[in-house]
Image 1 (cartoon, rainbow, N blue to C red):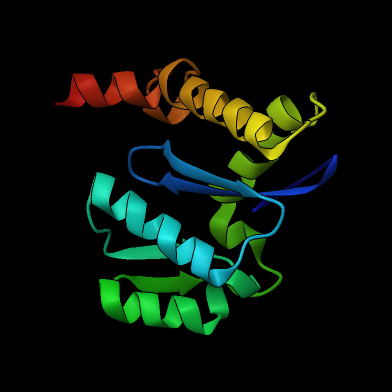
Image 2 (tube, rainbow, N blue to C red):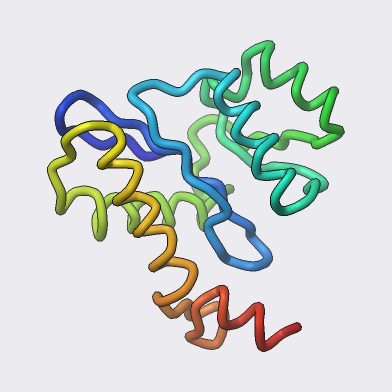
Length: 148
């Protein structure tokens, strides 16, 4: 989860696929609840299919009743990193750090809609333009097309 300061605090939940190395979705809001995360993950599942599990940190939006009920309904298992061990989720930490440093800290956001639009552009760049060393220096979308 990235936090950005601007006109009020903005939180961004980055959801990525470890295997494909792409950003599946980004939820941006001034605050993010477990209900919002559950709805967002349900939308992503409708688009991409059901993952076996989701690896996440112990933030309150993942440990509330809403997410407990969501895991029962969806059949998706949540796996949590140990508190104070960000290296257990190193790719996500790196993604959040780069996303914050390269994209978000360089801008001052106005209304939430503007921030969501800019974040959507960043996701497109990350998935379709930016090369990734783990994918033979190809963007995830190009790599996926070549692998198919």
